[in-house]
Amino acid sequence: MYIIKKIKILHQKIILLKKTNKKIGFVPTMGNLHNGHIKLILLSKKYADIIIVSIFINPMQFDNLLDLKNYPQTFKKDCVILQKQNVDIVFFPDINEIYPNGIKNQTFVVVPKLSKILEGRSRPGHFKGVTTIISKLFNFIQPDFAFFGEKDYQQLLIIKTLVKELNYTIKIISLPIIRLKNGLALSSRNNNLNTKEKKIAPYLYKIMKKTCEKIIKEDSDIRKKIIHSSKILLIKKGFSVDIFNIYNAQTLEPPSQKIKEVIFLASAWLGKTRLIDNKKIFLIY
Ligand code: PAF
Image 1 (cartoon, helix red, strand yellow):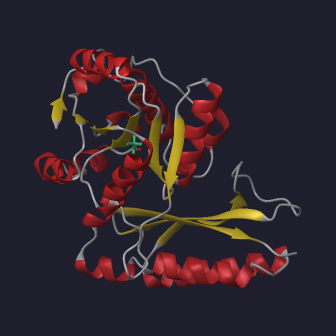
Image 2 (cartoon, helix red, strand yellow):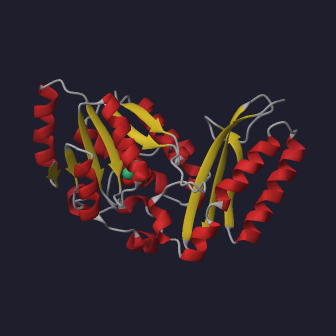
């Protein structure tokens, strides 16, 4: 497994790989790897011959400095995991390599509409940071396939839009949410939960799932009431709820009467940790 820190070296390696006609699969990460990342790597092997994983805690996508400071850095542990999975290349650049002129002066990439709503409204600048780093990584690595988890549903839609509208020839492959037995969606942020919060956290999924089951056959007024009661329940459990509702699964706008395929998005703070989750449902009218 090669660990590459410099764009120039990565570029030379990519040129050689492209000459062999081997398919390149790319898994972007911010490190602190968990089972969800391993599943992404396993999935990538079904599509590609060469697997490249990037580890870069991208400061441009953090709207909160404390959040960035607290983000776990576990490079050595991550490398053991990646080596075990027979990953070919780990790209682990320094911040100066990616943003040599600083973040403030960095040219950026934005997917305008989708980046402003929901998570984007709660975390201003977050998706601008994601789309800028992903564009850079796509340019360095030129993968045939790139792999993303469905837990970050809005991020996934934004990246698919970026690929389409900037005409990248990369295929985006997504992996369904990986959960613990208690239902909690796997996330690097779960490590920030204390013992008490770890017991409460699974309720985000449990309550969302129950809510989905209850609203499927109801009209919009009853739906609103059910969702409202579920929010109160989450607050009683200790969550500070930010997003908890259904949206058009493609546009993330409030669903119109005709739309049947919707996504339930949940986003809530538990202490200092922001947890997100989602579930696709088909409404029956
Ligand atoms: O989902 C993440 O871990 C990050 O947003 C990503 C896609 C690696 C970009 O920094």
